[in-house]
Amino acid sequence: MHVFVTGATGFVGSAVVRELLDAGHRVTGLARSDASAAALRAAGAQVHRGALDDADSLRRGAAAADGVIHTAFIHDFAHYLDNCRADGQAIAALGAGLAGSDRPLLVTSGTAVLPQGRLGTEADRADPASAPPRAISETAALALLPQRVRAMVLRLPPSVHGEGDHGFVPMLIGIARDTGVAAYVGDGANRWSAVQRTDAARLYRLALERGEAGACYHGNAEEGVAFGAIAAAIGRHLQVPVRSVPAEAAPAHFGWMARFASQDVPTSSAWTRKQLGWRPSGPGLLQDLDGAGYFAG
Image 1 (cartoon, rainbow, N blue to C red):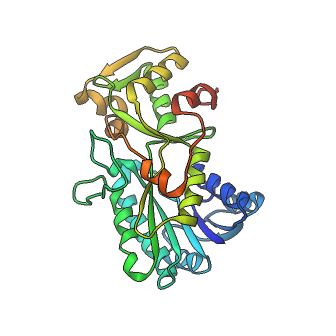
Image 2 (cartoon, rainbow, N blue to C red):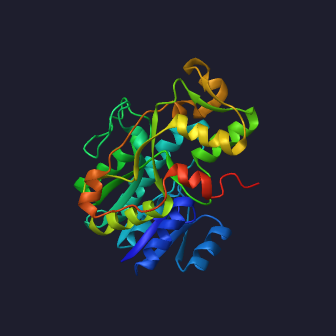
Image 3 (cartoon, rainbow, N blue to C red):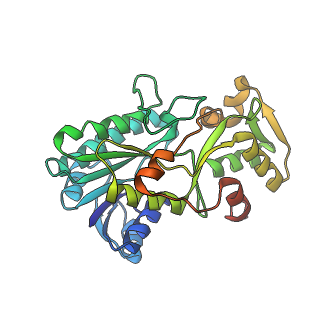
């Protein structure tokens, strides 16, 4: 299969490209810069020059492929709503390139769109009126089904971990370094689901190859790691105190990350595993914090 991948040089996307190539697929990656193009060629992928805000380049890249995996996202949380809206527009452009073909489009979302405080399942659907803005991505993808696009959603957990991670956990480590405290909110019992990067990449491939139109798949290997345990691991490695922060003081300590640090969204991936035969085998988040270079330097 010839697969068009957006975000193909990112932390998750580059692992997806490697997984697809190792499985015998042909890959074309979206590249905005010369550096990204060079990295794709070095990995063995073809290059399609363009950008997330260039609808025509997205449409053409999708039209030339047998299927699309969309991992790109603008991770500027100071403008989160705007970036979620831009993602919805990018998904619509990708869908325009696939319309009428029944070819697959696998779109990335996050488990943060699920209801808080209970185990979320793949049957849960995000309500754009009440869920975090990332639900826009899911709505945009599923709106393509009547256009004969085999649109699917893969929800990633708050932590996709492993060597080279530059997501939420490294940000928490940075906050702990800057403040001298590894903090958690309240009693620290709120939970983050998690997955190792290569396990997530394998799931993208399986969903592309076997997934059903309209399905939402969950890419978490661990249902819920207590945030207090994450803070304790950070404190141990940095040799700083581990302390509770009251909910009302969380924004002052964590900044824009306060809402994520307070999030309690344990997530099941049982249906995903059964449907796609996905068997994550990588280390857990706390194990990776001990051995994946998170505290180097």
